[in-house]
Length: 151
Image (cartoon, rainbow, N blue to C red):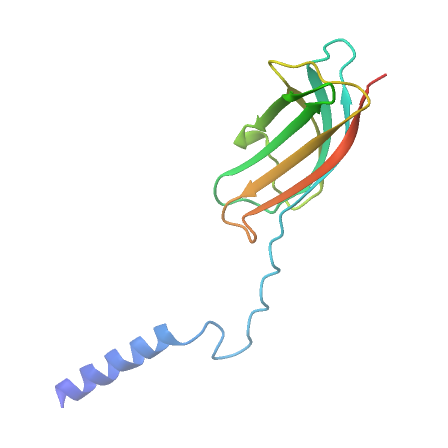
């Protein structure tokens, strides 16, 4: 008899652990899907330092449980010399990426160490936000723009 009581109590306890949350009453609504997005804006060459480009970026990410980052890069081919390619990249420190579910706007300075950006010439911009622990864990945007000189 004693074994039957212990077995019944143990089985009941395990069944309670295996039951889905809220099975005994109301169910909790499903949490909203976390979304990470990034959108590139324009890019302008710094008139005082032509090796720098200012890139506008908008992004949105939810509260991150783990690592997050925001990276922006610019690549430009010299129309006069097909072998010359300017490239620069900027990455934000994790603590500077605000992931609180509200839209954020930032301006990044992307520096090319070997190349002055060429005005009125196309460049490829790329931005990536990673928000590990969210769904999806990363978002990216890329586009071709004509670099102009900032006023």
